[in-house]
Structure formats: C-alpha cells, structure tokens
Length: 122
Image (cartoon, rainbow, N blue to C red; front, side, top):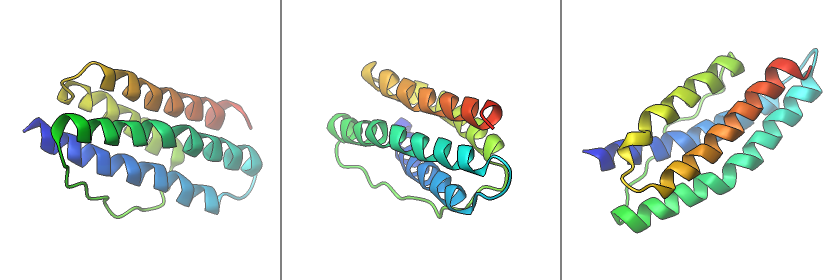
C-alpha cells in the first residue's frame, strides 16, 4: 500500500531533520564552524517543505498515523545525507499527485546544498 510507504517516509523525514540537529550539536575540530552553519541552514531549509508535504498528504490521504523513528546522531554526516537523498528519490513514485514532486524537489535541493557545503566549504 502506497499510503503506508508515505507515512513511513514522513516519519523518517522528521527524524532525518532532527538527526542533522543532533550532529550539529556535536561538531568540533577543523571546519567545525562551516559545518555547524551548513547544518543550521539545511535544517531551516527543510522545515517548510516537511510541513507542506505532511499537510498536503493529510489533505490527499486523510488522517495519517505518522510515527517518528528514534533519532540517532549519524557518525558520517556526508554518507547520512547522501543516503537520505536516495531514500527521497525512491519514495517519489508513491505520491499520486504531481505537486508533491515539487515539494520533494525542495527537500532534495536542501540536501544537495548541504552536501555542497559539507564537502567544499571548509
């Protein structure tokens, strides 16, 4: 059932955003300020698309029982962001309405900008 996949993704999406904050609080060492700021910016950029995707999913599918998985601090932030980028790409076909693709694009844009900042701006 596609709705179950969507519900699971929405919970994972909130957990993902929160995992960025957990990593953000533990950043130290070389380039820590750049990493700290890049994570803050990504978290801010994810807030509106997450809210829009959840609210429009409620509008399309009705009340959803979203559970947010336990959130852990990632050990490798670049791999974590790359993996969630792939998770988001895989869920696209589960959404039946076209406008959700635009919202997912915003999430992916925030992830790609974060990857750029983490990899290049030290």
